[in-house]
Image (cartoon, rainbow, N blue to C red; front, side, top):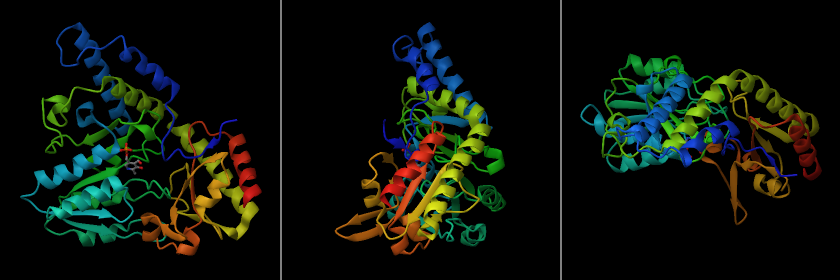
Length: 373
Ligand SMILES: Cc1ncc(COP(=O)(O)O)c(C=O)c1O
């Protein structure tokens, strides 16, 4: 039996329907989508079809979607693009203390270029207070970028409320939705955002493909200049095979969303209940109790180091929330921002479930943990 995969927030396997959709574009249809002949038309139609599939999942038009090389590129495009395009209006960005490095590090880079960045704090559940965002806005503020769902603890941020604040102040709003797309609804108008980032490999497409929603009419200097691909917003001959894959992945995710939200949540809740039943207050769940991704369970195991616990569980594939070097434990920046005490957070493990998780896997995983903890 292969190890039980409980690390869907790290990456997902490619859905067989996605792999099948890619097949014709690997060998048979190889034309350049920019070519006017029949070979080019075949791949052009494929890319534009895929764009519509992505747009449908987000409730926007196809012209508002560009394909990118992944979540990191989408985030960089927004942060650097806004800082450059709107530099005459202001030089202040607002983000949160619990963002992915694909947001934090471009912000650090921009700080070196003279941009001012406010990192709003979170509460003990990992949630941003919209009032903190409102207070942080200055006449210089050009962008608010807050993640939709946290990759570690799964806490959902009040994006719609923050989006309303952004709009009321005439500030652009971005959300990194790499972890929420396909797990919960991600409709751009409900969220009230101008930009939204997608990472394909979190939604059963291959690694190295992503997308970015850019609200119609919003100017944004591209990260990659060249010919006029992607409406002039990202140059480079289209990655037809992977664009098709992401389109199919979004179509499948949209159809699967009601089931996913119900069934994956049930499995996660079962796992959580079993851990609490067996270990009582030796386990503490991190993140928001309700406003949380349906597939994520982040737990502190009392009295152990998370990485050491997982080392004793080679049949389980999960992630830790802390690192231990030379006997010294360092919490992830997310747990630190949530003010998780180090003696608790050192035992942090993230379990994340997905489309192919079964009840048998959940039951077996709990048994395995009981054998070593
Ligand atoms: C919240 C979040 N943003 C961005 C990324 C980066 O996406 P990619 O790996 O496609 O660059 C990830 C993936 O780890 C993520 O979890």
